[in-house]
Length: 149
Image 1 (cartoon, rainbow, N blue to C red):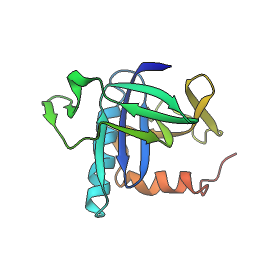
Image 2 (cartoon, one colour; image 1 turned 30 degrees about the horizontal axis):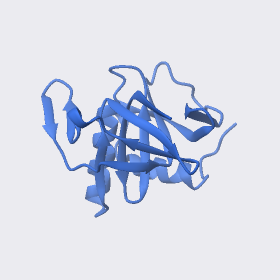
Image 3 (cartoon, one colour; image 1 turned 135 degrees about the vertical axis):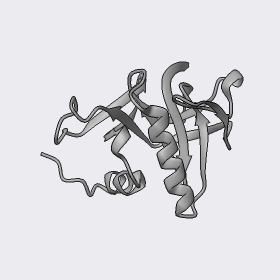
Image 4 (cartoon, one colour; image 1 turned 120 degrees about the vertical axis):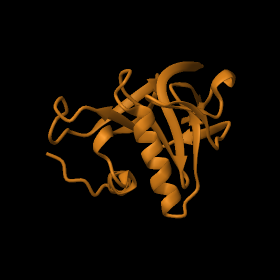
């Protein structure tokens, strides 16, 4: 079973990040910040898909890929669409919901994002337009170093 969802998928190092949120919430901006942060640290980083992501389950893992017509393309809001380094598919490890600072919870409880029945990713909330060095927060989340209520 596969599904086409409104999201952006990237890989930094060996970690697949599925960035979700409503239109104009900053998904592409946050993805670009993560890619730039990874590159500045000398880590591998690549786009899988921007704006539309095909997700499917394989061995209880979530695999993300790009619709062929947008493979390697990323929107830079207000500027246009650019070609970037990309992978045809990747395993996703964490979902990140791009949120607005005024509308987000201060200390959200642990949640999961289930893009396909029975396949869930841990969910991290990030304010897209205020992230500088987002990988530190993502690594703290993945290593269970975030304090939650």
